[in-house]
Length: 556
Image (cartoon, rainbow, N blue to C red; front, side, top):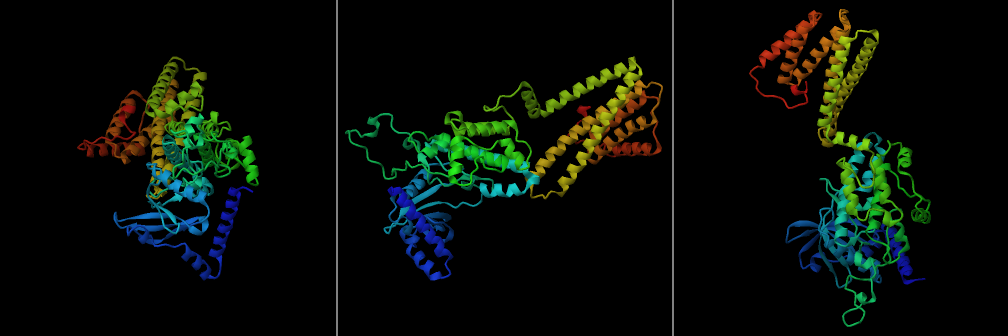
């Protein structure tokens, strides 16, 4: 048995002992052990740090909350306990390396380390920022139970994932590979900050890749170069099964690099999109075999099994590229993965997916909604104008049937948009003011629905006018009333919104159209409404403010 295996067995044995002692009914037993590993933080740090309380504990150590007496702030102190590592130099080396590597990474997505120290008795500790928040693992578990808001959760998690990719990309730029990325090591703070935690098994790239020539491994005098204090051999690559890349299981020097982190990020992205892990197995051996052979779940099938909507094809392409078995087929770095995720969120083209010309047009229209709507209005107006000319030139039954069908279709669209508008308004009124993200999403959807409904009303009025003109001398009382009610309904809605200019413009247009149609006669209830609109406009003639909402008179 190798010394590493013996160390692992000793560590596991002592970890079980600690867990048993914590659960033991007799407090003195745990108290005695705790006294053995307790030291005076204030004395060791020359009075700078004052112990407050313990905030976390595990089999290998604990984390305490302390106060920095010089800077008057609270800090976290991560301590490696003596009984666990008294004879385990590798564990101590990894602990010190974690502190030094993390301290060298200055990024908003990485917890800063302030200080490192140890006692004469062998306690090792480092000082870092106090971290508050919830791990991505917990957030994913909650989202899995909340199926009704699954799309909103995925949208949020993608923004979190982007920040993780950017933090890892920074670490790669600094020559550090994390090697243990997973949702449990990602934390979201109460103010939207995202932190990549636990750099205990990370490696420097120069350690992962062996020297190209024997001369690089020797000093200037021809002897073997001595390792620095924090350069203890850590070539035995470790990680979490299911998140480790295939090359990590091999442990071959030079085989593991930044693409291993890209693979782990791909596993995290798969979990975000499907609520499932891509690699399944009844034990660690089966999971390892599944990873090394590339036997994983399909993204769409996993989403379907979780009763979710199909995953967008571009996101599927990003995930599959990150999860490629061959490192050469993955993203070369976390930076390029972050670029594709950023492009997806901004609805731009991504490198992992080849779009069709129609797909590019659709994406352009989504990104330029205002221009797309204007083009749509021009097309519809042009088509309806052509239809009006044809109706005046041909009064055959064939064209009448076509125009009636067009009116029915537009009428259904207008009714459907009206129902959607009312539903969104109710949802917005019932959403708590504290849920700013949900309210913003509903308000955006409501604004788009209002625009579409406004355009649908214009198209329906034009279609009805076209049909009435095509019928010539046949006055359709019901269609005439529907046309008048459309005008009045739209102006009434604009009045409630306080859109003076739009109401004034629409009222003038309605009067002009009425003057050209001999069959336009107001019913008593309609006439009363017209009078009330006229009085409302007179009462607001002094108001010079104009609204910037979707009810812009230029849309006419």
